[in-house]
Image (cartoon, rainbow, N blue to C red; front, side, top):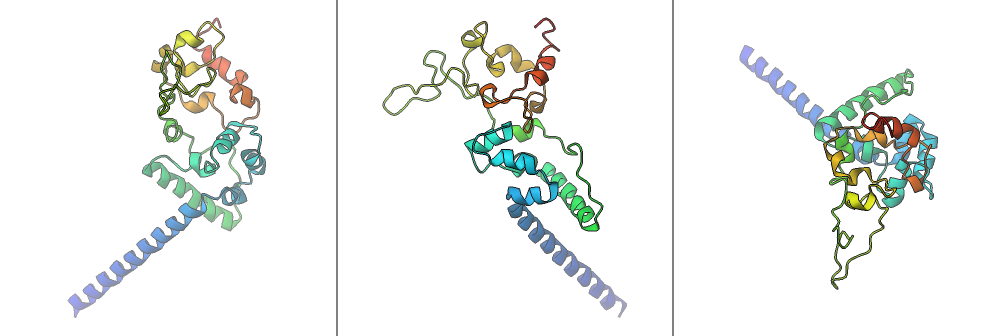
Length: 219
């Protein structure tokens, strides 16, 4: 009798565990689908201004520029975590915030509890610069054999330092000496700030110059 009762208890616990695991899997599957709707994110985080800039036809910040180039790039593209451990951390924070929201105790944080890492940026920006021939200045050759034209000011392609350094160029990543510099992407690239424009690739001089002066004090 005692053995039978123990087996029943074990069976009940196992069944409950399976049901719990299935419920969690279904919840996370639904959440993964729902969180790709930027309006779902905004409904709790109340970032109406940021959302308006994100979907504007003329980008007013770096996030909007990304969205203009690819409409699939939304909130979760950057804030969802680039790997599984970070994804679970994001979900844990989101779940805790949901409970606080339902309890009426949620307040919008004044800073990111899970700051963006370089890994989040490198989901799309790997390599940071597209390889470009120094002689042709093109990143690809068409089927006809003609080199495709590349805008020399395009910082997403490598123009060797002789093309930029000393000629008023601003391509930080194309200067080889910078390859050894270890700095978080978000130190220079702020997604939601509005103190720059598309012409300057939303690089804010007031933000970046002090960082440059850490190595170049006389600039």
